[in-house]
Image 1 (cartoon, helix red, strand yellow):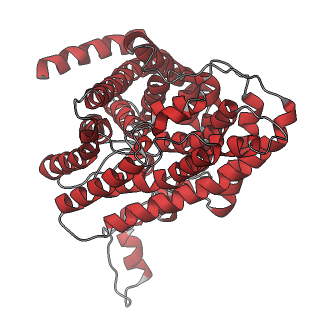
Image 2 (spheres, rainbow, N blue to C red):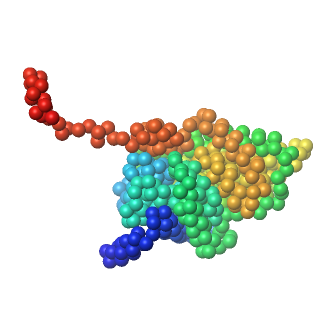
Image 3 (tube, rainbow, N blue to C red):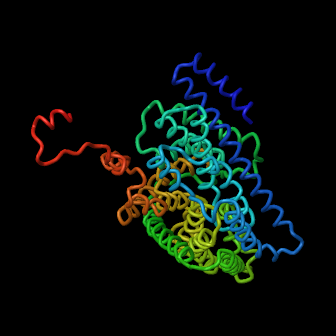
Length: 485
């Protein structure tokens, strides 16, 4: 290992002598993009393999016990190798940028891969995006450290790693770049764009080359945008805003309830797994990330999501499907909160898209049931995905461009902008900070868009106080004071 490090140092010294600073940053960002993209693809492949294996089990109902097994195994690994807990998600990354000079421990380059693969791969009701962002950011931070970059450039490499991870997961490089700028980087200068774009493109190429087309998350629109439906998109935006507020409250409430429960962590994991078993028994789409269900809903095949449900298996009537979809919308945040609160590792990116898809379907099916107008359910499902993602993750631009990219064009750009902006405005009015960053922001442990406050948050009062001073008696003369100075 020392020999490899020595050889790499020789290479970097040679490159430093040949390249100017901007060129060297591009070189480092390429390494970060490649490493983060490959790790994101590895994570997706592992989870996809586990889910396929569970689907092909000879006794289908057995899949219901796997979330509990996944939570128990994740808790065991956390207790055994990571001292019982570790910081997760986007909040961890933002805290490292603001409070730890953009240094992220090396262990974060692999611990999220291991724990989230187990949690999500066997049915935990959360997403992989937050672990991928945390992992990509840690990769960027540590590659920057090896290359002895400054604080500013380390922060940029953290953003590059996150951009590459998001780009690889969704094969959406533009969304990856915008996510890094919108969520992680409080201040952005033009010179940051080229490294971010290069990292995101390399990450997207990793997924495009390695992952199968069936694994990639994309759609093909069957209906174009019709301006006559704008009033309905406005109503959908309002509904997405309210749903986002509900999502945040129910998720954090459930997670905090389990977190505050002082009991053996293994018993907590077993209990959480049992509740997930009951929820997945009633509503099978709550099992795992839910991207298969999202595709089925957005392509008009929602009835296929009910096949494993003993309660809604024969849901063929409009009103039955409506009740089914609304039940999923209300219970998905609870399932995600149980998964995280019981010791699992994952994020809210995928659950937000999941809730949005079912919400958009329920809204459009309800409107269509009155027969005065027929609105395209697929388009409204996709628009609602952007709306709920905007409201839950506080990233409206990311949501707009992500859905635009995965639909292979900008046909829905106007409705995406309408729904996302309305949803985000409603949520922002009631909650200035997202549920992942609220506590950190209130404690001054992350940067916000208030520049003066950011500067003050980087100043440690303890460091500014000095004990190294000379005392002088009150009876001393001016000559004594001059002598001391």
